[in-house]
Length: 156
Image (cartoon, rainbow, N blue to C red):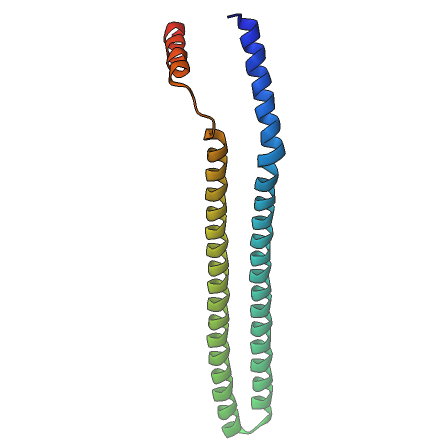
């Protein structure tokens, strides 16, 4: 067997395999990756929206607290005590609401992230199995395999 012919044949097979891979395997993989990227981006955008809503809620709480303080300064001493109590209650409620909104936003982000991760794992596993199935559809002859092993032993 001529080494040049073998090298030429292997090169031709390599380029055919590379072409088939680029033509039929890469486009679905890239499409799946792009879809996952878009879903993750959407999840991150939702988290940013949640963060913005949290900031609005904090601002609202601060505005409410400031308004309560202004009213407390304009009233008599008894009304001032009552205004401070109301302001503290509003602050506590705003803090509880802010913590609840933060917890909800974190939970939503974690859920979306875990869902995206699970879906991505599933798709990658399916694509890997499909790729392996396509590659392994061709069987190797035992004699040819034994000859290849003998040639490898001789080379080493």
